[in-house]
Image (cartoon, rainbow, N blue to C red):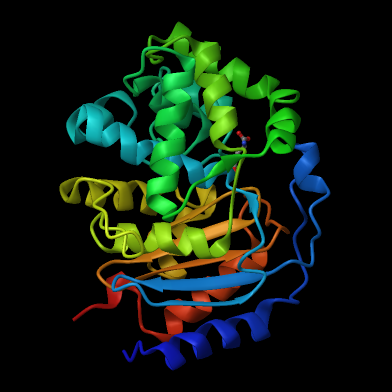
Length: 312
Ligand code: GLN
């Protein structure tokens, strides 16, 4: 696979040209802020493990990170508590149900199964060692910034919109507490989780994060080791199981790459040892994955023969 700069540019340009105007899907509406983001926006970016960057369309438009933040918090927590404890306390299986399912929690006696659904993500927030709420929040800002390769900021507008409407997540946090599966104050975990979903990122930043995971935790833009190399395989396994929620199996079947989406319209995929691909476009499918984002990322993955189940 030839990944010189002009080829990378052609990959993002072609994917964008083919899919940036594809119809279908709808913005998330249960968070008021997300409903009013212009639906026509579409951007795509690639960052290679040796630091080459290519992007097309609205790849520098800042949007809400949402569920993609769950991967960042997982990275921080697994480094602190270790992979065995993370798996024991949170899990490493798909729920097969929507990302905010209460039924999934009830079915498994309060074990979230995955750090990439809302229940598991709040429990993962609670695992971080922090002396108070602000220290917990700062740890998350730090890991998000380290992974995307530049400082990440909270959007007060997104955060207010989410904090005013996150009653379902508060309910999940109390259910975890009742099942002894919450490791700090449940409303602190829910508050910090809601904030972590409300930072703004670009597709180019998300491609940098994906490239960092592709490079066993080494960020090719900053040159820093952000996650312990031996933990990256576990993070990628979690992404394979639950990264695109109840469509994770379809994504693995069709594209064959660890991925993660967010209801802000972001999507990233990791090509281990090679590169990160990310896309942004607000309209979502029924599971909460960007419709155009999936098409653009899948296009590039196919063009470079990136399917990890297809290696000789
Ligand atoms: N903040 C959103 C929520 O908790 C994130 C969900 C998502 O991106 N899937 O519902």
